[in-house]
Image (cartoon, rainbow, N blue to C red; front, side, top):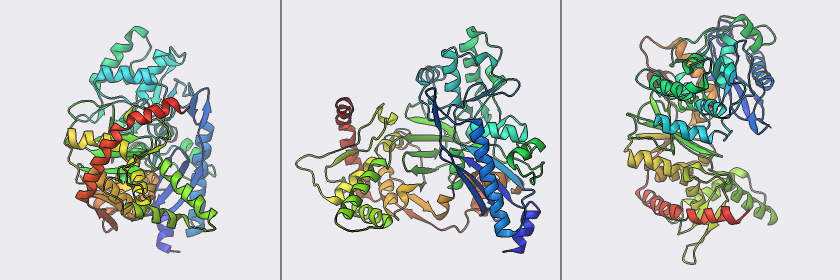
Length: 532
């Protein structure tokens, strides 16, 4: 145990980040060098109540308190010090959704999470009104849908926020939000760094006939950018966070952020011409733009970095689920043959075989649509594998085509950015399960996007570390130091990583596959229609 670390903890030289993901709440305490020194987590699940995916306030606080308690216990066990003060704190949560409160601070309806697809009419009408794509999961889509539905609570709304914004408000008393998270509440004007006033006025005019007692600007949180101070922990907030009563009030908070923003920070991809792609059950790419797009696209969501730079987000609902199911089938076969194969070896062997396949996957075709896919306009999906009599059907091509198709829908969105809009991208940073087998996911992704793909050792630290870094930046930055410089010099300098550049054969092969993929969508549509 380091005496220096014990002193740093006692003197509040640490920084805490807590992120509420969809299945886990994680607390990460970092030291003066911005690396994690203690952590605690709490598993939780959403509930489906009255056709709404939700989490109760009770579960939110139980989860936060449990993850904090475990992290504080980890500190005590490792360093023999009680956690009484911290240099700074930041909270992050799953993006978007809908939390509304009345004047007395009472919640009006259960939290509506990003997972609810119940705002289709609102999403379409607002996208047309603003000439700006409004995804169904955004807070403003939920608000407008509730207005269209004539829900009783609408007139009583005093404050509209997200999960991260709600927790921040309860702990600090401040109704503000980091700009990255705010960009999923309502469109941001990147020139002012706040909500788009023209669109706010358009919205107010659209709902004027409802004669509600509020204007939109009255109920929205204040927007802050990374580095700004967003309030301090109140006496009441300290008791809420640490039920033992050891934690003292007065600790500064950074602006609350969403998990997309903290993922960008944790992968050091907030600079223009950089991006990150998260590939697991679903896959999404975040690309930091140099300029605005020429028009609105249904396939592209526009959000911002925590510093307010414009980000294009291409999101696909399906990535590795069907691929994992096929690997599971090969595992079953191995066991039936009396072989026990380690999961890492099984994935590694099959994934590496894909690199030996034909550049285009040998004429094979697959769709991993376990659920619907908005990128290609499917409300339902059917996993599908198909080949012609001329296809080169072998294991290498079979694995290659399933890795290809895991990125097929994403590529449609990325082609809009890279080909139609000619967005410049120097590199993209990959993280998530698809990149666990060294080199393979990277090489396939580089071929799909025709961009160098890097994977860093720190990419697994996650969003709780990302929000801790934003809190650290707020209290430790030099005068006029940008977040980009702070991360490059104080966090990621000297960190090991690997980069794979696109192989022209892979690029050409993926393009051939994509022609087959787009043409074959009618086969997938028939499967949805006839395979009930």
